[in-house]
Length: 121
Image (cartoon, rainbow, N blue to C red; front, side):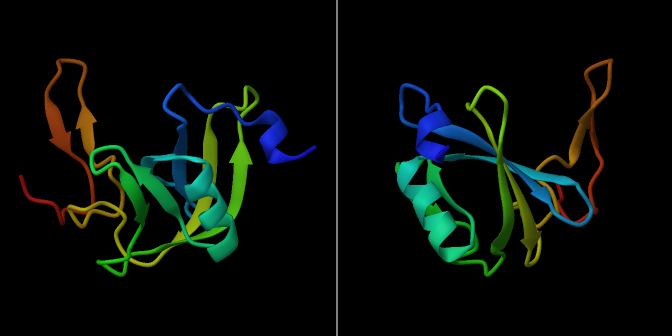
């Protein structure tokens, strides 16, 4: 079976991709990929996404140097989400936090900064 036989892109030709640190298992970010960015990722071994805001390919770390070396790609049971197990070269978030998920929502809806302490708000 080939990836093209089971992958399910949305109506914009995108599929969500969860990025996880291969060693620590920490979830680092959520990005979106199209067929071209998946092809580039598989060829280069570094994460490439489709930027929904800029409407263009985005090679993670091309300006910051904080690339994500892809060690493994998994697809979920429905074929509509990817999991990339990566080795990050530096912080993943544009705020310089290790993970983009550094804000915790309490049940009273308050937001608590819960990251490395690098990002300041």
